[in-house]
Image: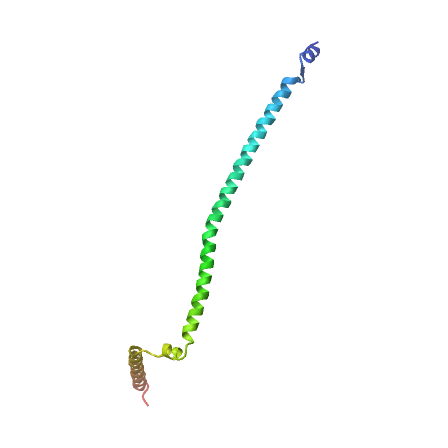
Length: 127
């Protein structure tokens, strides 16, 4: 019969059942594994490039942070030591001659404006 002839030739349900098929299946698995290994290798390389780039970005930032903190601490100590010297606070808080003159001029302008405002109020609202 036809089925018997197919079975004798190594075929079953339209598929060849012999060592060649098993060899091909092994080759397919090997190629699939190699493909998976290559994909995994590429993913790991990309991951390490990202990690390396992040570290390259973070190291200068960390160095600058430490430098800024140290400078701030030293600058604060320096400023405090200069401000709290005897007589230094009074000298630093003194008003310069130019600022004193400008302040006096502005005070005179304010007084003139207040006087002008009072005159306008008297004109607008007579007694």
